[in-house]
Amino acid sequence: MSPTSPPASPPTTVEATVDAAVVGAGFSGLYAVHRLHDLGLSVRAFEAGGGVGGTWYWNRYPGARCDIESVYYSYSFDRELTAEWQWSERYAAQPEILRYLEHVADRFDLRRHFTFDTRVTGAAFDETTGRWRVETDGGEVVSARHLVLGVGLLSQRALPDIEGIGDFAGEIHHTGAWPHQAVDFTGRRVGVIGTGSTGIQAIPLIARQAEHLTVFQRTPNFSLPARNGSPDPEKSRRRIDEFDAVTEQLRTSSYGILLDPPTRSALEVSAEERRSTYEARWAEGTLTGILQAYNDMVRNQEANDTAADFIRERIREIVADPQVADDLCPRGYAYGTKRPCLDSGYYATYNRDDVELVNLRRTPIERITGDAVVTSDREHPVDALVLATGYDAQTGPLLALDPVGRGGRRLSAHWEQGARSYLGLTVAGFPNLYTICGPGSPSALSNAVVSIEQHVEWTADLIVHLADRGLTTAEATDVAEKEWSAHVQEVASYTLYPQTDSWLMGANIPGKPRVFLPYIGGVGAYRAHCDQVAAEGYAGFELA
Image (cartoon, rainbow, N blue to C red):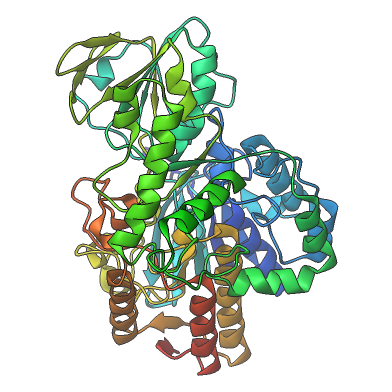
């Protein structure tokens, strides 16, 4: 080096070597870190947020809460954890769920494995070393034998492409990225775009605070009253006193919840009996109550129509203005084929004088100005906008990272014609990559926590299987991936789901390939299949 040469720049990366890297600190990431560390593996985990919680860290919008009863929407891997946490509500709100996950992180000393406020910006499989090179926006590089992506089902926000939205002068908040400080809408004119689950939960609370609320609705959704309140003491008692039995029932059920499977068709009974059943299910306040009243609700359009007509009658009874009620009545798709919603006074909110519903099918949004949403018929003045516009579900969070597998092939290229996987957990050409709640798993159509535990436990067992045999890589074969992906689509084809434009089909994202994303065969059937794969020495994998 000559005397005039500039000094060498210090290295900007620090490379660490671990057995497993985990991305995400929600239900998936926390349990993955706990399980893998307990097995003796060295683990590094990364989270873009400032703390644990995943979905429940980011989704702080008014009314955010679970739609599975909290006594079941919680971990079941530890009996003592279940016994010591007492839920205050039947359907817990976001702050309580976040406290629960923070409690889990503290109880099992999980935070020390995480680097927070850090986004993973790249992940590539090194064929020479057989390891994943994981890079972060903090300049760190980690070399990991296994890469577990617990990035969530619904974490990649879908933002509307509306002319002029960047010119809006007021506050804009997406429900999936709500500010941590309270948002006060008092005395303000608020516009909410979107009436899916997050919109239906947020709208009643925003309406109570805003001077005027305008709801911009493209597609009305089916929603049932949540009947929220204190947890059922009998269910809470059973969850602890009969812990093993209840856990087994959850894990072998169709949806990861406790229900008696229906045995009759909706068309086998009289109209009077059917109506009585629907009335009782409407009153009980559960997500699947009416949907699981009969065994052909998602397979037979005529049977489905009986339930859809019943719900539309209830909407018309609640909403005073006949035109508004009609606009709120879902049509053109089968009940249940868009994820149903649970609400707390949603339909009654439209009886307020200070709430207006804009039917975008009739008068679509043309542009947004500095202080208004302009539809085809007029301007709607607003001071603040809430985007309840949903998510690029299941595949979006994985493609945002877009890992690079064998031969430099990106996941986005592999999924160019539509998502495919083996068991929803692995992808051909991407060794030792595990996609918790990935496409082809039942997670999106189930109690996600029950599915997450199965995914993590099965993944951990595979990693142990490799280590015990002196093996280093597990890779799904092309044949296994094609067969499983074909099976996922075949099972879906027996139902009404693929006939509906929904996020389950990727239809809410322009240009996204249309395939049915989740496995609809049921949590219990899926678990049995995964167990059989393991029992056969991980059939469908190349172990090396």
